[in-house]
Length: 288
Image 1 (cartoon, rainbow, N blue to C red):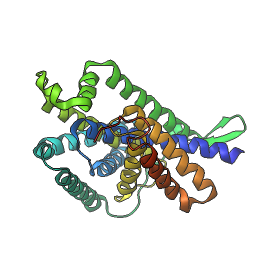
Image 2 (tube, helix red, strand yellow):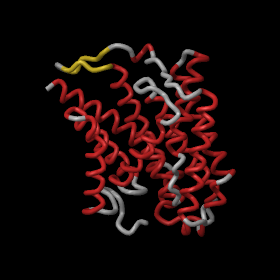
Image 3 (cartoon, rainbow, N blue to C red):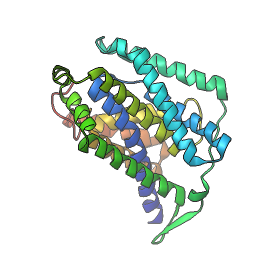
């Protein structure tokens, strides 16, 4: 029973982190119509920037800020320097250019840090264990779960309770109408791309004491995030959260029986969603 509860918590923690990463991915796609294959690389960039900041300061909080800001700046540079030229281009052009950007970012990280695995130690305030009834659970994993949940709540507030969020959500529904209303869509697009990139970098630092860092870790995160978006529904913020939790629990609970089948089960569920509800669990029918 304790093992089952532990796996449930692991699934929830993994799911909320996946939701955090996927939120950026789904917002970028929903608003800009761009399938950002560089999103996993931005997760890597944020993780390694956090690693560097932690090595220089021994402060995990500074590492979180540094990882988020570096990913934000890289995202803004990508949008202003390249992606803006591809908004009106065919989807395959956008896929190829973001895929290429992702490769370049990963290889830059590899050239700086090498290909060996690195790690960020658990911060002092996250060391130890927590007792939840009869369950003994690592304290930092519990804190990571809370941090991810709080960040998602903050993003929900920004998207659903502020004028900026209103513009972003209107852009997801009808970008041409938002443009016709005289709103500076280009500036909004820049901000949306930056927020999406920052979410990926932020999640990378939060996840870094749990996993080992390697330049190629973004590929797995990218694939899992796309599955989350498909399950939850493209362009849906609540869908990213629901999809993330479902994906996290599938990966965690299946690993309890046989880790080799965890991703198999994840893709089986994704295939079933595509068959019976192609728009995703919380997506809108008719969205391309």
